[in-house]
Amino acid sequence: MNFTSESYELYSEDKCKELIEEGLSKIEKGDVSSALKIFKEVQKFFPNHSKTNLYLANLYSIQDEKQEALKSYTIAWEQRDKLEKQENHYVPYQSIFILLSMESIPKDLLKIWIERAEEFYFEYSRSERIIIDFAKQILQSKSS
Image 1: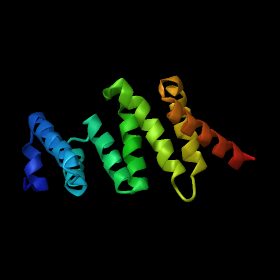
Image 2 (image 1 turned 180 degrees about the vertical axis):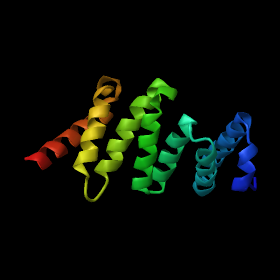
Image 3 (image 1 turned 90 degrees about the vertical axis):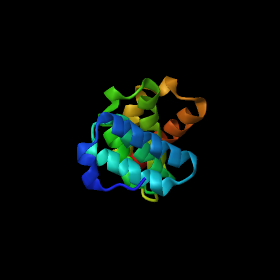
Image 4 (image 1 turned 90 degrees about the horizontal axis):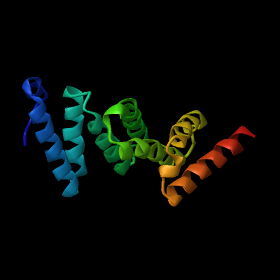
């Protein structure tokens, strides 16, 4: 599909869904850069579509664009009332995972995401809880 930003002005919610499906299809085919381009456009013209930021965050994470991934996870978190329950607990965990992978871990952000993850702590798998507990230890060791 060849599209321009101007063409989105007239897009309906159905067109939004069609583009999201196209973006997901690109992901399934391993075409991350095309999927990213599509989801950026969807976000631009449909900023309240909650899953778009979740998809963007995941795509940025795949491309190791950690700051962009965190920005998109933050927006997804702010729109969490529109997400499904399992997606809500996914966002804090993924954000913590990204923060832990940074060369210099921003402890203020880590603290925020740990607090958000606490609400879902017992919904996480054992391995996810281990990562969260490790993040808590990192935070405590930096506080000492």
